[in-house]
Length: 284
Image (cartoon, rainbow, N blue to C red; front, top):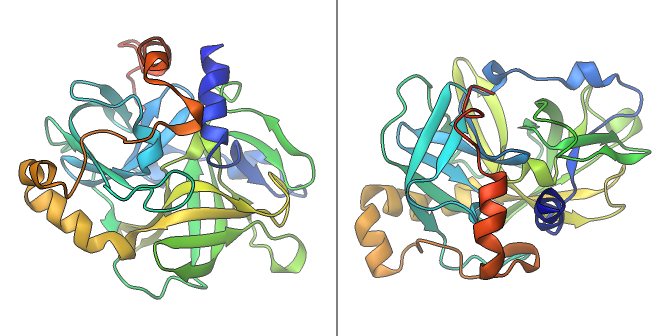
């Protein structure tokens, strides 16, 4: 029941999987931690962030409902402990400003952080999605949910359809307009990056936020990502003075609104069930 509840929470924001082309084999989408070393994972069946400094992670605000000081999360090289949460004060569930920063208790030195893409020329650029959400294809829709996926990591390509204000929009294309490994991200992939690699550096352009319209979980569906470049001023202010940002209201230390109909009374048992155990805190 707890896993079903988590799935409903994540589905309320977007689809439930990295969905792939119907004419490509699933194995071609399988990914390794080295494909995006800065990936972090919050719960046993999904929700991600990206390491952007040795002690800072960027993610979507709605993924943080179980994160608090002392929470242990997974990295591609082991684990990390949350020191403090910083949620954008204007986060409006299902609408905008779906962004948060996770401050860590100790810096991670084994992983090279990703860089933030600060330019505003995102439209038309090809990127990658990555995550452990479930899967399906553009014709059938989801066939394996994020719990049954059991942590299998996949990546898929897409192209920025639109970059406007605080959001990036992606479309799940079919036919000649589709990229070789075309796909779209979803619920178990929430908070994960829209990224690209240049030389030895990985750049995070957006954060998986929610379903944006069209046929849900099938071709022509739209996916909305929080646009990193739009939030650079806020990100910089928080990381420069984390304690003061909480005191001054630049950031909040927890969500104002819980996602997917969750109530505060749901959290103790749900979080106990979905956070990683010590045994599970191994590399992805």
